[in-house]
Length: 253
Image 1 (cartoon, rainbow, N blue to C red):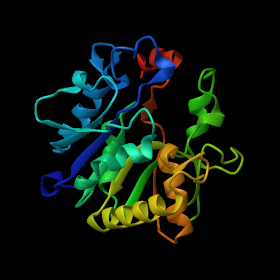
Image 2 (image 1 turned 90 degrees about the vertical axis):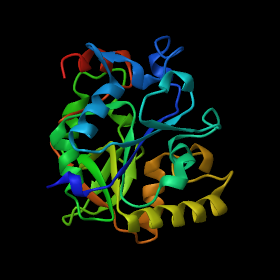
Image 3 (image 1 turned 180 degrees about the horizontal axis):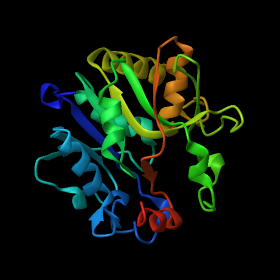
Image 4 (image 1 turned 30 degrees about the vertical axis):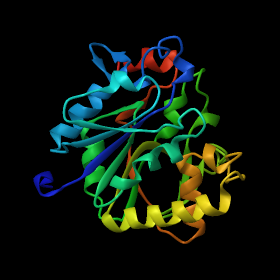
């Protein structure tokens, strides 16, 4: 794969307060916490740049002034205290076009994981860990019930997603990396506008209100509207940092 031919926008969602890692996140966005000598954000940028992905955008909110970086565009989610990750993503709706990579800001991943995602030819593709259950061995502060679980069929199309999915019926976990083609971006924007108009202030799948929705809630809405979402499988090669326990484990990643 020659990534020099690709012209992706990368969107890193980093507006949230990282409540489970207080007091470390009182004065810092979660993505600036350090794993050894580098921050979580540094590790992501290292992998993106290795794949010639230099159009980096970061959605900021909590401690936004700490996320000033040369050659990185900041997009502010002014309502980050009142909404959740789905609406935070669409703070960047002006650049949800063309080919894009979307990343949660609290994950680290190896180069092979991103390269696998970049090779996908689907309009909407998400990275899924098929060995996900081993991520929760001895992980007491972030139980398996908190996993963003998915069920995909034999064609690797996702049929259900979310924390509320029964672990016995799930065969993977979203790692927080997504790829959209230009067509995929059109689909995302179209159905986000439909969902916002229909569900604003109302329950939206697992979320009490649309404003508090996760991206998995939106994926379920897309699936219900017959939109194809491809699971791109990995076996490990990534980590989520959500608790002090995760931060300690990440030192050995």
